[in-house]
Length: 227
View (tube, rainbow, N blue to C red):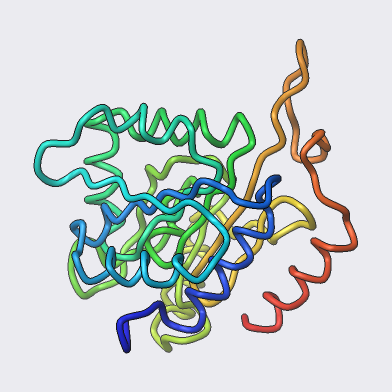
């Protein structure tokens, strides 16, 4: 974090997440668990969101959290910080936040984040959660299929490490599709349309809260140029 605010790519990802929300002033929750609930990160988040049309809030899990799943239940957008992916997943499962995030995804909330905040949504990911060496993590939330490697284009050791894992049988990446999810410099975001009654949603199932394909296509093209 530089200058007390989000880095440029973080700000761009937040703007994209807000653009996917189905209301003009969405309720946004910052989930800084991967960073250990960093005060600096929380302050930067609120500073950045104060300049945008939304209602920001923060859910801290370090200390004594009060009903964290209930805090997430009413959110339209949930943004996860960077940091330690494995630690965040463990703490979320302890407090039932993993279930709350699944429920948010199922009802159509917008989910996203950078680095660890991107890793967490996939089945598998590449992480330095266990030390300096990059290692596979195979127990993500699995809201998105396949695997993810943050910083693939910005850290030279990421590409060969990821390719070697895939060659050894690690699940490959899932390419973003219009209107479902997108990524930028180690970040990802997405929203699932709420399931219709009596029908299991699929990746191609449009929902009543979907925005126009044209608008999403323009946003996605801008993000793909950053990869």
